Length: 462
Image 1 (spheres, one colour):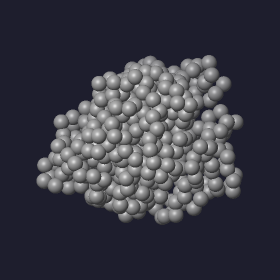
Image 2 (cartoon, rainbow, N blue to C red):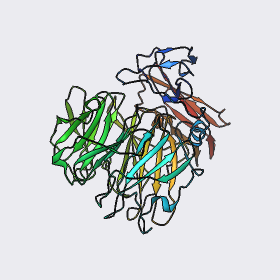
Image 3 (cartoon, rainbow, N blue to C red):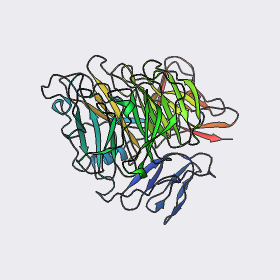
Image 4 (cartoon, rainbow, N blue to C red):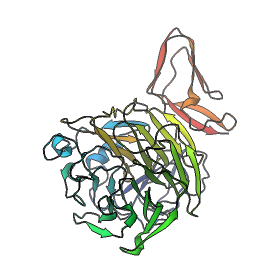
């Protein structure tokens, strides 16, 4: 996959990497070792490369995709037109209907209490294992080639069916994993397959829902973050083999525990759950826990009144979205700082219903976006969205003044530092009566009112 190495350019944004044949991976920041093609450098800020071969240290293998040509699937088309910092609603998805997400009696939705799904890249599909309250498990999938959603056969049948954060996937092989809440074991769905396989169990987890799964790419195996044993690891090369304990940092552990592998630092982000809804730890590859830390918002997985958490590979940021208010924050694994963000075209309209709705997300490495699936209430069709995050400044589509004054543009810059940064505006010529100071970041309007649209803010290291 990709190697993040030292960078000789001061700032690199919107990097699109083309894999052999038609596979694309999006990333930002750093520089990349490559054979077969010469990268084009744009003003020292943007590297654009296509075709050739790329390598990422710590990855098991290079991904290949031999399906439809780049940009030919519905998701690829939508992603290719999506600018950084913006979202788009996926109104053209097939069978995005109420029967898809309803129980057999069509009296309740299967999305309740959920956080993340799976991206089977080699198998060209999205996957989500779930279930309504006190009813049997369900499973839905999206075929990227046919642009169609459908019901699938779940890993097990039980009324302990809520998704919570208990599913994940191997981004290299596409294998999808779920925790079986009735027996304490785990099931794997190989890429492109409809036949479930069993792997080793953790007996202490029998009939508990306080479990979160994520895939640790550096360790190359499955992480089970849970109330009973803390953090456990199952190595992929163990076959169906046993679990090893990585430790317990002193968790209380409760419903809604959440976990993510953060590629840029190779750390695990581990949230404690609803009992301590803002508490989290970081676990590095040496097996050392850091924390606990306190997030500026709740970070547990639950129903519509909680927040979604998702690690976005392209921007190398952890995203947290409030399902009800649509408030959006990001976590930078390198600096360990949180940031409040609003997409350029306005808040992502999750607009969750805490009583009868929910939402979940997937980081789509193959197109450099995050996918959001939203159920706002029973008896209505769900909605789906793509969002392309960026660590570059995200500026509102229009900056409006109702009186003469200044607007601080540094608020849109992650980790702004006036000692090491200058700002430059691109994308439009300022109208008469407007001026911009790249040293202070002040956009000034001398007229009684006015607005500027289409601004692009560039950070220049000094």
